[in-house]
Length: 119
Image 1 (cartoon, rainbow, N blue to C red):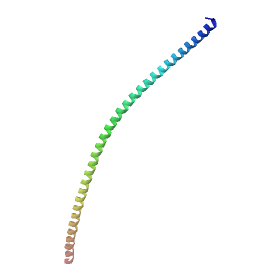
Image 2 (cartoon, rainbow, N blue to C red; image 1 turned 60 degrees about the vertical axis):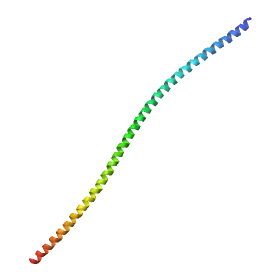
Image 3 (cartoon, rainbow, N blue to C red; image 1 turned 90 degrees about the vertical axis):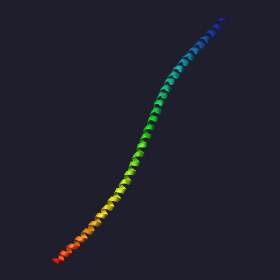
Image 4 (tube, rainbow, N blue to C red; image 1 turned 30 degrees about the vertical axis):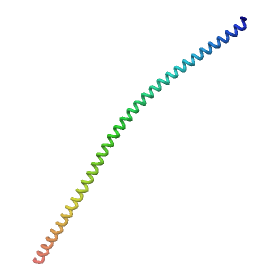
């Protein structure tokens, strides 16, 4: 084999080795990047799990609040009905008192007029 061919092949072999080295480095970098992406994905999965747990907790709280709001609404309705009945009762009793007072004053007025005429 002549020297020129040998030098050419050596050069090609060196370039091939350099290419192989660069390729190996690029694969190493890619592996590192993939590892970082995997770690990031794991963290995101953990965050998503925590968020899902928190959302379920919020749903439970919302359901509890809805139940309490319904109870308060029922209480307000009952209280409103009781107040309405009480208002009607007080109005009737007040009207009875007014009627009684009118009759009492009417009778008293008659008696006072009789006394004024007699006197």
